[in-house]
Image 1 (cartoon, rainbow, N blue to C red):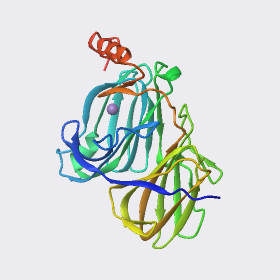
Image 2 (cartoon, rainbow, N blue to C red):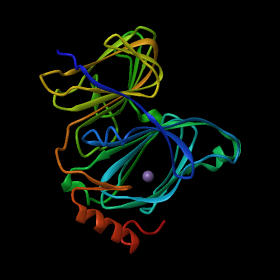
Image 3 (cartoon, rainbow, N blue to C red):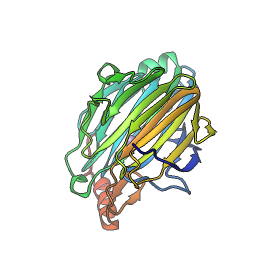
Image 4 (cartoon, rainbow, N blue to C red):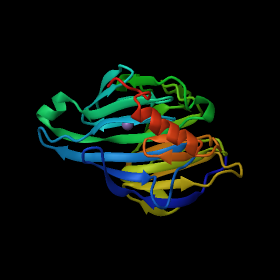
Length: 286
Ligand code: MN
């Protein structure tokens, strides 16, 4: 076993999505475009919402990658051009392979709009290999009860959103090898996570504090780890205790050309996606 060293620590940037939903964006930013195969990580909320004032993202297209929503609190209602409809509640996961094209809306549910409450969660974009960028879209809705959970060491709780950890396998098809974990550590607890040495890996602190190489990291910090040299383990050590995401994946090493909601391999493919969307050939019908 060899521990991964930290290469960079980046604070998230405050911005807005959709119709005014506040998000902490870890990437893409000026200092980091993507972490192959991951294209975006947003932490939305925690936002205390009064009745009728919930924010979301009205209909918009995607092509060429996968959008992943993980809810901590609140309720989102999803509708898409492939006819899928679902409500995401606290602890639920939605893994959508946009592939050839989907138009979807991600809005607060009627129930949430009526009562108000706290909205919080994550959106992660995972790239698709060139061969899968135009595959038929696939919608995967995983309720909280179907997310495997384990306590591999004292003071540690791990939810396996995708990939394999401690013999547990997440319940989504991801098209490529990735690991996505929600980890809760008690004060001073520590956890070792095996991650293949050639995979890119990051952790994100969203509650409490993480102790990393004798530095204390506060919420909304993204930690990037060095790749290679046989370092096959990410060690998370809690200072005051807290909640973290661990996100890792095998790099695609393919060209990335992105324009808003389209992520392809060439500029010509981006123009094609824009034309297909304008002419109603990309995920029409929402
Ligand atoms: Mn979307």
